[in-house]
Image 1 (cartoon, helix red, strand yellow):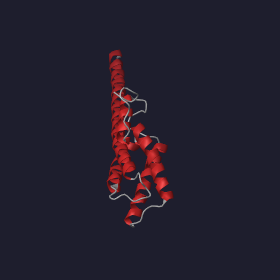
Image 2 (tube, rainbow, N blue to C red):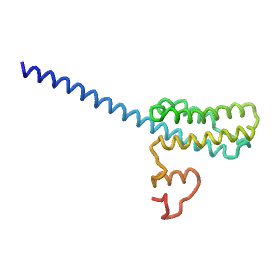
Image 3 (cartoon, helix red, strand yellow):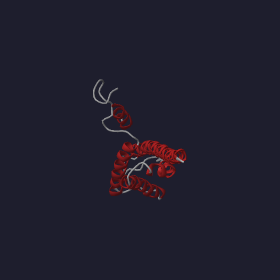
Image 4 (cartoon, rainbow, N blue to C red):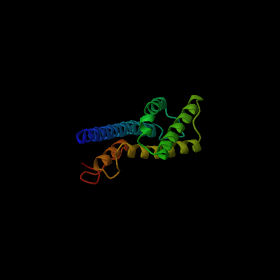
Length: 162
């Protein structure tokens, strides 16, 4: 009787441990997918920022549709890795891009107020996506990457060099 009880307790403990391990693996996988989605979205936000740097003047060939495609494809994975506030900040930036696309489709340039809204939303969203991708501003490699995508060159041997 005692051995049957120990066997039953072993089965229960094994089941709980197995479930816990599977839950942890699933959580880690969702976090990894969220980091990858954030990295992709950050890259698109950076490209959008560069293309739209001279707003309210209309860029010659904005690729806004491609940025929106990546957002729509990756946003559910990203939502698993950011807070609701961060997700809504990202969504606001892409909403501004959708608004800009609608303005461009009417073949007019955005006014200065709309251009400012778009730039501010992109800046906030880039910061959120950068952090959500696992990067931190203090990481030397992160500083080099941020310098590379922003066009700045860190001084040789100075902060941000590897």
